[in-house]
Length: 199
Image (cartoon, rainbow, N blue to C red):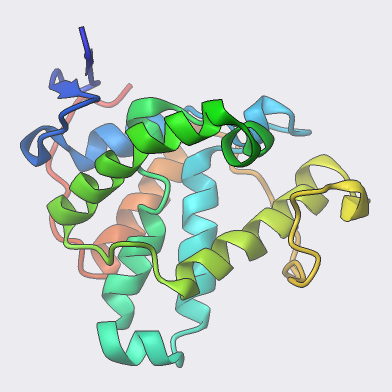
């Protein structure tokens, strides 16, 4: 068996993903329950809130050349769903994902899913530089605020990228972060998100 049952009841095939089985609210539901950094944070901080932060950073860079070419709405939506594949395959901590054979195999499964999600929601694929940089800025800020003020000891942290000045306040309840995400998605042209029984 290579499929999982999603929150909405879809059968999502991990090795042969079908765009018709990709539902935004399944992604929102799952990412609101997955904690960043493998759960090693001072407080619960979801991948969904991380995605919101990356979207905010991209929006703040609206004057970029990429925004002029693609449109800021599409770039922000891409940022909001840059980790959407984790709703289906989960997350792998960065040292494993980027430095081991296991991580390479994981990425071979993850990348086709990322492509299908991008096609389903008309996102930019592969991820543009503006989103990748925003992801690194978010990582630096999260590492400082949620784990350890001394990030100099972290081998995989981008030393050339500064964290945001503002400190992160984790959103306590997953329903609140889901509502914020859906408002952002609609605001930046994502359209109707549909309905589901989200618990």
